[in-house]
Length: 510
Image 1 (cartoon, helix red, strand yellow):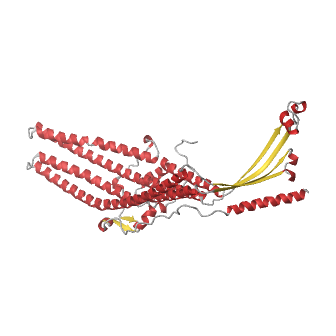
Image 2 (image 1 turned 120 degrees about the vertical axis):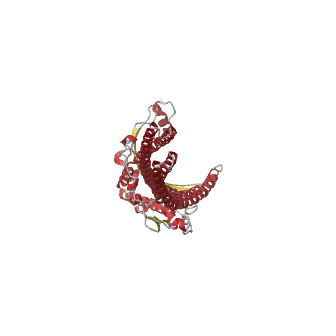
Image 3 (image 1 turned 90 degrees about the vertical axis):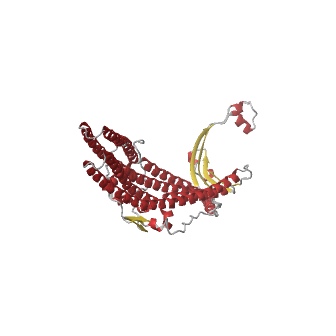
């Protein structure tokens, strides 16, 4: 008898397993729109051909490879070290990496909805019925002596296994997983955008730092020259050779030059504090790499991606596309929530009064349950949620289009900047050379008495301005070159050093 019961139990369990295997194949097609990435713009250039060619000393090469470490094109070891230290310590990068890890784990969690859930339980209870309940069950009147004595205590043991499954008939789970995968993809490109923004900002700040130090050094040289001229004028006034008005004019010029130093030094301090923040350290912990503007090398060959590739390379465009994908899946989720949901569950176990009899065939218990839930009236909740999801999808499509337009504008702006920066720097260099020659000639004429000292002051002011302007124009070329690399995506697809890993930051966590 026990062997026959075991065979019967096996057959029942086999039928139960086949039932759930069949239910797993009930999944139908997912409702809602299927996502397709928008096509690339059908254009062949970013700007006018003359602008897109770059400058005579800085050629733009269409289709050339963009290095993942694009800042190495400036050939500055100090800059390379600064960026390497910042990438190792920057808290924003750590946050973006761990956010991506969280999004991927949440995706894996949702993927568990494709499979049945299985759980086991064991319960042990010690019970004793009251006299009232035992008397009622035996037909003895309430309040009799036999009823008030109650029943004997007993133990009840239960061991069972339960399995449940919800067939994804209309793709609710699939759309939820699809949407979460799109969220993870957004975080992937948010990480790349953080990386690209960080490196570009460091290069720009380092160039600004070098430019400000050169401007301060030039201002101090100008101030020293003006101080020297002022001492000469004072001696000439003491000897009665010139009027005192010349001294007063020179003092005013020297004071004006001295007044330009504090703003420059303030900017320099703020830029260094910003570099410290990029590196993820406090201002007092930052060691200035002292990058010299003259030590940087302007790339003579600048790579330029073809327009059809830009949408694949820009992290912000890829992030906007992932958001569009997420909103597309959300429409499917909202649609599936309006349709019937089927649930299947089964359990098998044993109930016994003692451990010795717990797993015998006579104590077997089992159940099979199926159910269908169809929303009938939700007060418009499900309907308007679906309509809101559709409107959000349309908004995401418009945002994606706007992101693409702005990306092409960024590239066009950077190309125009490179083109005109070269012209501006050439003009500033010519102006500095001419101003220096003019100043030398004017000073010689002043020594001979051919011109007044006012003429010398005017020539000095003109020369001083051209020196500062030339330094600023030179720095602008480096900054705009970095902006072009950033506008093109920074070559992240050739780099594998920002894969998310479990990272801790800043000593906050143990």
